[in-house]
Image (cartoon, rainbow over all chains, first blue to last red; front, side, top):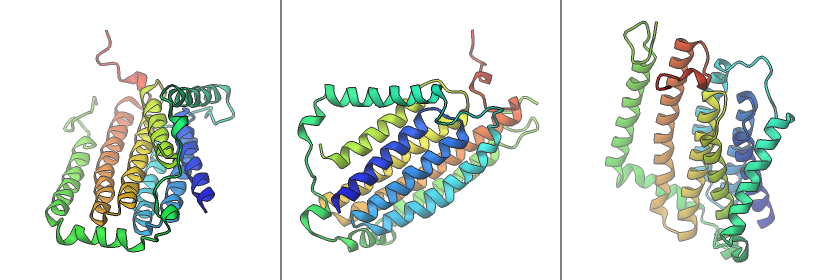
Length: 172
Length: 98
């Protein structure tokens, strides 16, 4: 079971590399979707299923969907995917930088299994449910602050895209 | 450093490097920012698992709320740029160019 978690964490890192290696945005979103699905599976394998479901619904089903149809604004006549040499060079270069950093810092010497739920044998399925439920009882002030911030962001976005010489960023 | 910690540290570093380097489109930089937020979410969600503290499970969800705010603002900037300059190419942002 631990090997599955390691495979999912590897998929997570590869998704991040796929976004960072500068393909055309149409293909970059695919890397982000892969990374978020691998992250969800990873969190479920570790036992916390609620935060994983929140990630799927809010991040993948809310934010990434909006990103996917916003990449229509980034039209390229010749989109570069991961088969182009430019993207491959970027990806290999970034991977080498990270590996070199790990070697220099000596991180390969201290690899251990880790103290997660799988290694100690506990299944903490109720940890995340009760923790998030505390958001409504003890953390009500924080909840209201977050809600106020979200409402404020709505008006920020409205102000930024108002346009026609009355908005914040328009030349015409 | 466990291998699980290493994977989200390296995902964060890769996305941060991807944000820092030159690219053609603004939305590629926004995607790298989103990838950084995703790795931070997974890191914050793994922390209460390992320390067995239930009340810290609300922190990744709070972070996700503010990350949604930031993504929305970034996309609004993208739309404003596309309306003003016709595309979201980064070489259009040359107001401070000497």
